[in-house]
Image (cartoon, rainbow, N blue to C red; front, side, top):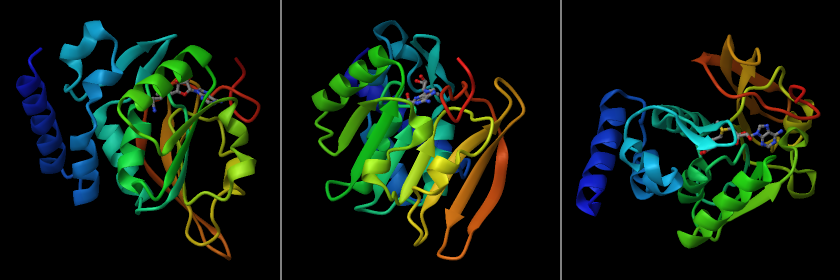
Length: 221
Ligand code: SAM
């Protein structure tokens, strides 16, 4: 597909998300406009990159629908220089958006349990010069204690419960966690939790469908 056609399709999709009030802020709008989603998809599916739907990325996993990326980014209220943890790197696309949002002064740690996906994502992120993203192969349900606390934590797979390991790694000065919680393949809610010095403020945002979070504090394999 020709570059100008792809760029136009990306612009149309982002403008559509804005018109639907899923993209609200200018920083999320610009971040999503800057990241070439088609380069994170398998070559055969490039023509589906700017349809607002999830796509297969191999190993039984998916890249989320763009409206879900946008919604999660808006709930996370990412600011320049935020230290961000993402669990579920998948293709690396959402990590690239997070990297755009936090900027060169910030950092994104992203954990993926499937080595093939992590390696591919890391290569792509390097090719696109995202020097503020570190891809880690591990069980993300444990968080990343060595780099905590995090200003923002994003989980991109559905968990049976909110892992305590993630709650304690949130910055107590307003850190935000966004995580899908529910059954393995259905009845999942997107939960947003803000940590203050005194408490955790939790809100249920909407129904979602994600692949399962598999690990020590997630579902069994
Ligand atoms: N954020 C991704 C993107 O932009 O392409 C999409 C993520 S996909 C919906 C969910 C990912 O979570 C899968 O790649 C899956 O292998 C990964 N995953 C599941 N359990 C995990 C765990 N315990 N730790 C790290 N990654 C996990």
